[in-house]
Length: 286
Image (tube, rainbow, N blue to C red; front, side, top):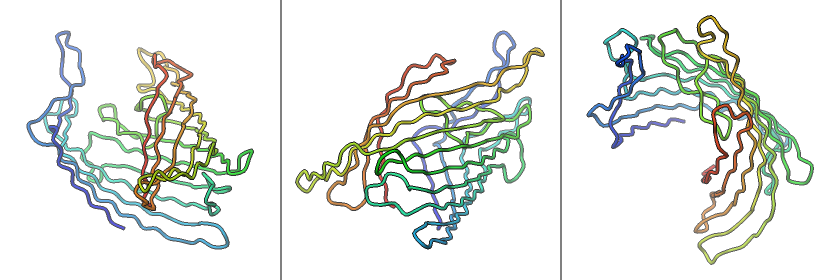
């Protein structure tokens, strides 16, 4: 499977670099460039299906290259560099087939690994890799399910390199934080509340109302590790919350649509964050 995308945006491209302020202190600044922002990517997926005996089994290989005209400058280097990188990934999954009313597979797991790097070695950005294990098991009642995730991420950067975006998500209710090392754990417990099975003429068919209770935890190694010779302790981010979701179909199409609301409460609130309420929307064509 191949996916080619070129996005020409109405915002300007940006240049990121260091500049001295009035106190001769280096500050990271970002400036607009009078060029439209261009984001291009090429993705290749190679799925292999080994399903049998009531179990879905498969191997997925992924390659992706991305190039934008956003640019950045290294410290004390006047040469502009463009953001481009390549991603390689592999996933292996083994899980039971799901019933029509099940929200998660009754039993199963997925092991996923990704590595992101500058393919030409021009410098300025580091490499980032991650591994993640996801497991599925039954809940306390019928059609309930428990999903557990454990992931580890590392970044290989020099002192004057820029951090890349995390491959693992931040805890729900927190903002992403760049780090050389990160451990991420999460738990989701999903269960149905009600099956209305109600048609609103031919416009909408309401299938299900469901709830997801979740908890996320991340341990982030600080960078730099020391300041003035004093070691910096790791940053702990822990949140709990719930999603209330409605599953439905519009205009009698087969693909499901999901709309809902999320409440996320940061627990280790070192960043002064308030509880967050988000609107959720998802449309699946699988």
